[in-house]
Amino acid sequence: MAFFVLSHEFVLPYGAVVRRGVAVLRKEHFLCAFRTTSFFPRCDNPRTTSQVAFVDLQVAFVDFGFGENGFLESQVAFVDLQVAFVDFGFGENGFLESQVAFVDLQVAFVDFGFGESVFAERKRRRWMFVVGLDIGYGNLKVVSGFAEKKPMQVQVLPAGAAPLSAASRDIRGQLTSGVLVLLDDAQYVAGIEPEILCWTRALHEDYPTSPEYRALFHAALLGTEQTVVDRLVTGLPVSHFKDARKVDDLVRRMVGTHRVLNDHSITVREVQVLPQPIGSYLDVTAGREDEFEEAEVLVVDPGFFSVDWVYLSGTTVRQEWSGSSTTATSMLLEAACANIRESHGFAVSVDKLERLIRAGRKAFRIPGGVVEIGAAVHRAAATLGPALVNEIKMSLRSRAQDISFIVLTGGGATYYERAMREIFPHAEVVLPKNSVTSNALGFWWYGVD
Image (cartoon, rainbow, N blue to C red):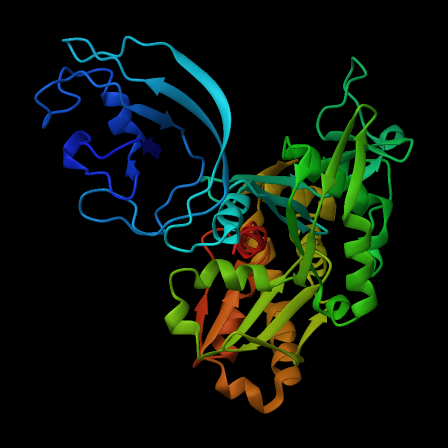
């Protein structure tokens, strides 16, 4: 917006009349003044010596209301502005001829009683940098961006992380993938395929406290290309989230200044932790809030190491019916690898199968034939899927009959969809547009709101 402070009333472009010494126009209207020959269409004389203060405000006044003539009706107080003081001297052709001097000015308008906090909060929110972070066992998902500046940046990397010495290199001795980060004084590579690491993968309950998790966290921060993150929202498995000490410990480790490279540090000012699947709930219900507002909703997130589910009554999380299971995607892939070995006589590792799925491969060649990945995984899901879904249903007890929606998310969502529909026939099963990034995207929206 362009903001004008005038010494007395006169007519502005498009008939916007100044009242109480204040008028508001769109910035583009002001700029047009220097490109047209009729800046003051309702003035007989295009020359005027009225002083004008101009500023390009970074926060729009759209929430404060404008009259039909364009003047600001709801005033704002105490704003630090950098303004250009202009002594208007328009020639016959309507173009500005006078010099411009820049000064710092504190403007205080209190005609309508709006306090400083109203504008200050909106300005703060506009320039707040938010990160939605989902550090999984299989993938690192990061959604980042300024609160009122779209689109946000979305990144997905493999969740492999290890000391630099454990990473495979090409024939020139260079890393083939991954992000180099610093953990204290040790170099780590993160966001790399586990298959090409000479390192035991961290698949255990204490994963959020592991060096690998921290390396992925540093890689996520580095990927934002910022030096300050105002708010970071992340998730923990439901079983961890129920333990307040684990939540507090994660916040403590993420808040503060982190030296991610020898010469680069990033500060995280605020951290909020949610149950892992809540991110997908926020993502899926965006624009459908009225449908879900009073509904009983089950959110199921099959991850690589664990499967988490959250039960919501409306927007209330019912922790007593939420939980976690280790009957996860890693077990599904192990069963799929066994199927391939039995049917093709060829051994393939879980890490390789995971990499192929992440890359979107439908099949891969083996000596003497081709393996259809989808067929092998779905055969495994036909056995493990119902077992997992029944485990979830048993944990819900009588509440299972009340569920109206099931939000099925995570990298393994499609493998369990059939079992969900068969075992919960009365519930509507909803999958996010992108099951892999859905949690991180919901975390980001939560941080913005």
